[in-house]
Image: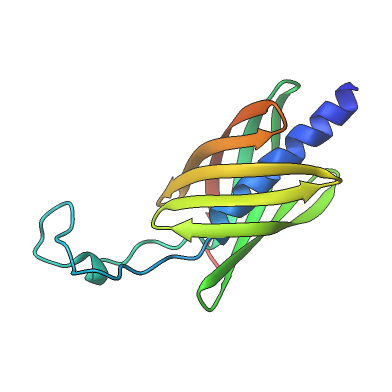
Length: 145
């Protein structure tokens, strides 16, 4: 049972990372607004950093800290991700990026994990949900593609 929980936790972490990385950035459709720093530039002219790259993550699970990587890629305006962990590699089924928020889902050997995270620069924090588990996620970008 403990081995299953570790696998389940790892799958959830990987799914979370993939979701964060693979979401599409949605452009604003309304009148341009001033940015937070009030530089005089519209939000449309302020480039949001892309989550594309390789992220090394750690996930707080009931079985301890699980680690692995999430590789996020962008094809046109869509994102996708791959979760790399000790038991194998898993493609995210769903990933959406909206601003600096990433959401996604990954199926790890039949266990669906959902990830919600925010990234800023090369750091990411979030939560992975798998069944009744809620796990804290932290990641650092190690490569930009």
